[in-house]
Length: 343
Ligand code: NAD
Ligand code: UDP
Image (cartoon, rainbow, N blue to C red; front, side):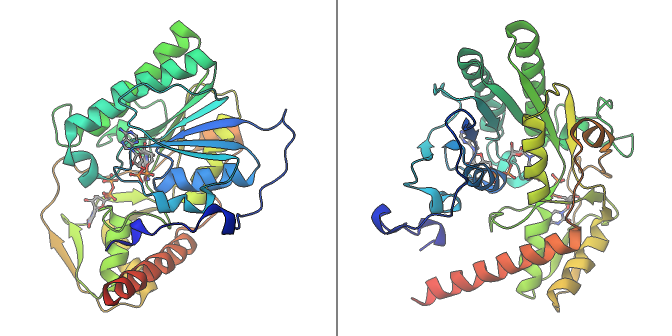
């Protein structure tokens, strides 16, 4: 039995979080593709609480209904099971286009599907945005910079991507998605926003996500070995999900059509990161080195000057504060899982 299959009580008995009252004129209809996933569900919460109408489109590949379950039945909310590789039409003012597997094991699981989602899926959503004259924001990624030779990475850097490596289905998929955005902007006058998102973490990451934050926390909580891929001197910079959501909304509501990095410049080696997590959890886990992953970027840190200048945005949550909240989330997930097995 999986905790993700928990069923919501019938709507009549539901109590929803209190949403802000908005006049018809100031309320927006917003489509979020990938809205039951990790980032998408936090974005859904923020926009719902702010009094907007939200339509979530998701094929539940890595998303879970229970991430948005607390809104099901609310008059401002709609959940649609749909694969964006197929066209979809809905009248909306804004599209946050997040649908795509995001963790390396998930996007490498079916590379052809990852490419289809990022190319055909993005064309379908741009077609929708063109028809209904919606503003469309693409959740792009720091992976467009590949294994970067410029550090930290500004938006002006063109990147260093292996087009035939195991990560290329995602990296090149997102690069084509960006090209599609600018082509539809230029040719079809679609109003676009491009967010280049750097490593983000927080509650609601999938237990099987496979990315470093959830792996290390789960390993530490269970006193299992913490697995570092390679020597551990590769670096990443981690941002808490609430900061990202604020940045996505600020970008959407700006008039900035050029790409904008959204990330927290607090950079750590993966070895340091393992020790930080083990200490925060208070775990006895040993730290072990596993084989290096092919084409693993060796350094990554966002230059967020542009986001500061054009959006007045910068991250507010320190990595340690964010990690503490995430550790609590996974501690509860493990307890729930244990309870379900016992029942
Ligand atoms: P996630 O895997 O939790 O969410 C992705 C969502 O997209 C899931 O709900 C999944 O079911 C859905 N999806 C995938 N393919 C689909 C399809 N064909 N049709 C409909 N829905 C589909 O990942 P996330 O971390 O929430 O990432 C969200 C977006 O942000 C992704 O586009 C990702 O590339 C981007 N991003 C995330 C990070 C990060 O660190 N979390 C970093 C850079 C970019
Ligand atoms: N990583 C690791 N152990 C794990 C998972 C990931 O050492 O259990 C490393 C991975 O090789 C990479 C970094 O952590 O160098 C970040 O990996 P993640 O999959 O989180 O994101 P991405 O590589 O896409 O930045």
